[in-house]
Length: 116
Image (tube, rainbow, N blue to C red; front, side, top):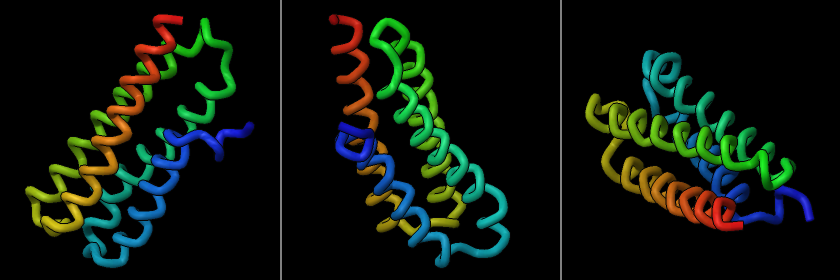
């Protein structure tokens, strides 16, 4: 099994694809500020998930905790884009639901890894 078969990886991958679709609706100014940071953090999220998948269980907890921090930062960036009107409410709700689902999956992954 590779990381592409794991639901949390697919969810992060889909989040990035969605961000790419929405990029074209952003002003150029926003594309090079908050949007760029959101994009970079989403790529970091994908990287951390792939790394955690491929890491031994005893070393995985710290990577998953770092992944959780990145998700929290993404929540903040998405909310900031909505509050500054760089992102409309419909797109905000869609992105936020993806991020919320990722947060739930990461929380469950962390709990199950700690229990193992």
